[in-house]
Length: 298
Image: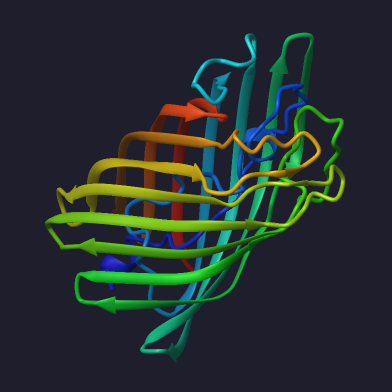
């Protein structure tokens, strides 16, 4: 029971993404994807026991580089600061399915975004891409835990192709997810969450972003029953070309980040903290993310 509660996170979230008015050909629209890479780490494959759970997820992301396909800074003077607070409700159902149990979730992100390029700057705040998981299935095999689902990411309430700072992407995305965690109480943990993105066309720009594959990962150790520390990060790669106005088939996004992470449990509350630095970025921003999360059971 405590091991499952200690690892509430299951599948996807939304966050702020920046859409840049740049003249150079881009990879996926805005050189970013809907999912906030690195969101999941310890316990990614562990869905909690039947019940209703609330998680508050806060991320601060800052970047001073928008890299081109060779990893060079394509926009001198570029700056991005994003503060996201996402409310996430997970319902784990007492309903067996295929030998596992059913779960659902919704994530609603509130976003503040500041973007600067030479000669122009914009600040905006509001709701980003909301994520729905109508149904997923989780299995537990002793120390091995597996969860799978298809997340549906919705367009934000407000979007304008002339804005420098948009709070999300103006299209629907369907994202199959497979998350696996191997965790030994008082021992090592390894977690991986793999995702694949299928996008619809942005009808405001007639741009179709290519498909992307990305993986969040964590490797750590249970120091005490209530504390876990280790390394966390993500890898992202674009697998198919974009199409539409301004698309360039050879330009594809890719990024890798890594950093320290920890989780802590205290009196029924569950805390996560990690920092991730993007050590490699092609057709993508390159910066740092700080995550702080807290979870509880209703």
